[in-house]
Length: 215
Image (cartoon, rainbow, N blue to C red; front, side, top):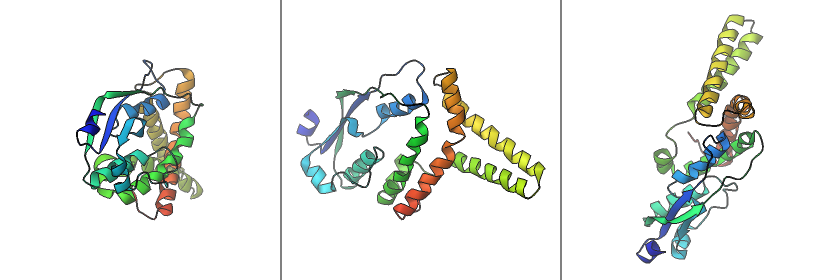
């Protein structure tokens, strides 16, 4: 590539993800590749750059954050990453089963590893703080259950209403620009009630696994 010939140590190219007018939530999430700064679906690096940074970290055992890890390693080593818009890859979204976003939450554990290795860049480019909505939904559900056990039905009702409202708001945000078919609406409602707790579980599990407190 011309960019490598002109002194770049790594190059990221253009990723085109074709989508229908009203994609599913899964398709829209996968299309995030098109806006990625550095994604291995279309990236190149010199052998010298990979040897200097150690290449890919095999602890990233899912296709999640491994490209950010390599990008951050290149940046911290002071290596030059160029952009080549003429290096284009067409990346169709593979078919997925109903409710696939539930199993995808397992990938959240690798946020902890990325944060452990590159805390400053993680906060700057990935996420500054925890997913507060998820924790608020968990807190509301916990208060509702504890209040029921403690024979405080009024508090339980208020907490339950708050949980329902946050769940519906979360589902509505996911449906804002996605498919409105009955099956997809049902999927968003169902998964929006489950995703926060699975995500928190995998984030905590990743924090213990990689021995780091991750926001």
